[in-house]
Image 1 (cartoon, rainbow, N blue to C red):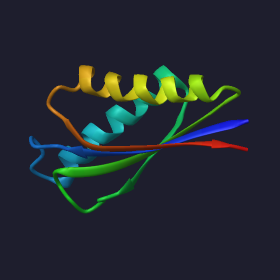
Image 2 (tube, rainbow, N blue to C red):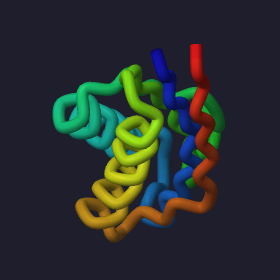
Image 3 (cartoon, one colour):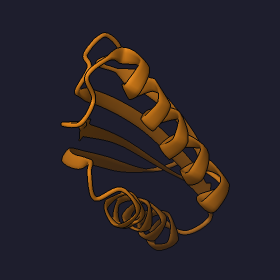
Length: 96
């Protein structure tokens, strides 16, 4: 079993309140969850208006496939939300 985990730090320059941020983050998480069948949640920067940390995980039988899924998710966010900047992307592949 291979577990792929990632933490994505997002910069949201257009947000001017926590309500704006929550709306954008919930939308991104729902789309990523439905498109890629991964577990995803907001894991940090909860009180900051223009920053968010999202954690996600994916289980696979191949480390190459797991790595590809994480890379596709990054590209998907960049392409579907050009108003958001991915300021950090950390990933780890764990062989269980």
